[in-house]
Image (cartoon, rainbow, N blue to C red; front, top):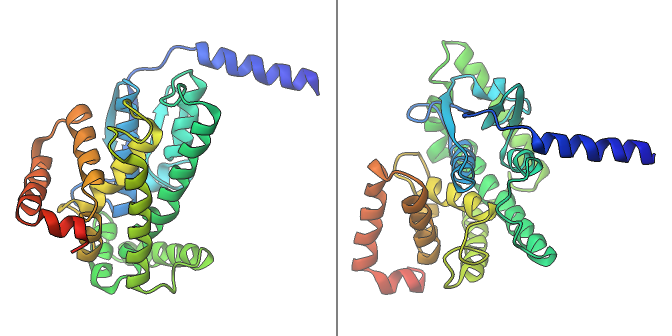
Length: 283
């Protein structure tokens, strides 16, 4: 047993010493016509995380990225000969190379950070899946986007397969039978917890971003973006929390080229200037 542990320790140390294969390639679905809410949120979170770590990467859109991924979920990255998928897996792999955004946190701080990451994944991800595949107002748009890159009848089959998979997951987690109002309420409670934690700080754990900042950014941006089909009540709910919107813009300004995303900022500034008191009072 000691020999096994020693061997693992040496392997981790050697892996950390290996040079990064640059640039990293990040695979994701096509953004304009295909990608859905939860996938876009996770892809943006990984992009933000890599930028915060100052790692070079290039985005490689593929219509079958989901099927290329080792876990069947996007995004995934290619580092040399290795394929690593999903936000947590990518963070862990990069951490094994000695690069972490949360090394400065004490053990209690790291526990708190992981708790907020879990909260985001348990609420925002499930809400996004519900909106896409259960909410009848969005479902038809979801089917069009998800199946847009595949020929008939494969597009219909893959839509049916994906919806069945999502419903099974949401049923196990107790989300499938929720009403829209209950989903909105869960999102609002999550936003309250995140906003209270953020308070008047620039980031969730001080002056510099950690992994949870990248994760929250991806979801808040995606859920409030006019470029993806979402539920208007969800958007209105999130806009009740200006601290989270400001946090999103802060990361956008620091790590991303604004480009067309300025339209979101301008739209929010109009809303904020015309009804600031309403935003704070919860409409």
